[in-house]
Image (cartoon, rainbow, N blue to C red; front, top):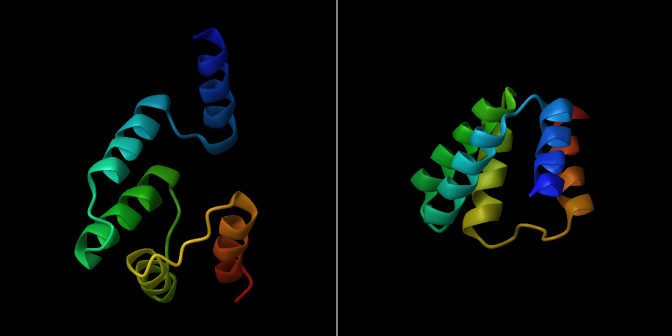
Length: 89
């Protein structure tokens, strides 16, 4: 368990997101209907709130379309690239 706590400590230091918030977020993802647009929008708002970032309406729409259409990349580098596109605009 010590190793897991170390990972969460590292995540918290880099992101300023507490372990409890990560678990709440993970639970929300597990219980959300990712085919339902309203559920996906709520999840995006929750993630943005936990991460303390703003998500433009355009980026939110793009994320909703990708998630509900099962067009979300499953590897981290592709996900990171998807999020960085908004910063480059």
